[in-house]
Structure formats: C-alpha cells, structure tokens
Length: 149
Image 1: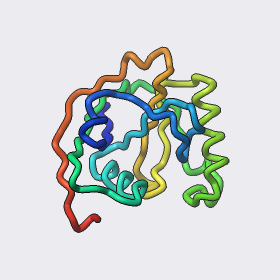
Image 2 (image 1 turned 135 degrees about the vertical axis):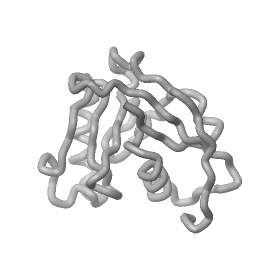
Image 3 (image 1 turned 120 degrees about the vertical axis):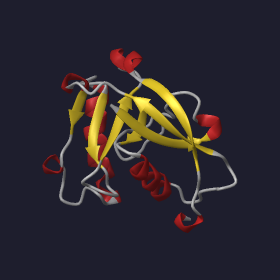
C-alpha cells in the first residue's frame, strides 16, 4: 500500500521521525505520520503548520507499507471520545497511540484524520521489528498553490 507525506526537501530524502509529541504520540516516540493520499497529506501539513514557507522546496514522499492486516492496527471513530478532533482530547489520543507504540502491537496505526474523518492517516512505528518492510519508493515535486496559504 502506498501512503504519502509532504516534507521540506532537506528532510524528504530519508524515512526519519522527529520524536516530537503530536496528536497520537508522546515525546520520544518515533513515529512517521503519513496520509492515505496526496490531498490529505497537503491538508494535514497546512493545518499543522502556522507558517508554510513556499520559498522552501517541498517533496511528496511516496512510501510503501505492508497492507496485510497483521501489520496494521486500526482505530475507528467508535473507539474515540466524542470530541476527539479538538485539542483538549490530545492527552487521551496520545495515550491510545502511546499504548500502541510501547506495546509494539503493529508496524502501523491507522487512524481517522481530524481534518477529514472519513479519510485515514497512518502512523509508522520506526522502532518496530518490521520497520524494514517500509520503503521510500520515490519523491515527487510538490507545488504550493498560493490559494492554500
């Protein structure tokens, strides 16, 4: 299965995680956030960055992950609190993600996107024993349409 991540050119050449806390992980948990398609990856980047700098070059990272069920743990809307899309739910969502990460339950955590809940984001656990199955297939140039900014 292919998933997508948009990164500044200088960070797009390798599959690395920052270890910084986000919606589904605590600090020092090494996950790579990806999206099910290029459009969602674009929206996720826009909503998570307060200042997109179009002067920088960006790349779409096309990443291959195994799509067999044993590699993916899925969290659905019914598994989440009613207000899960709001920032006050971060602690509960981080706990869900951290339990998955520290328990080494699977290589990938599939979650609904807070921006478009009918679409999915995929977190990749870079410390999982099956991480070697994740491949950066290619980079694609990314153009920032100024109407997004």
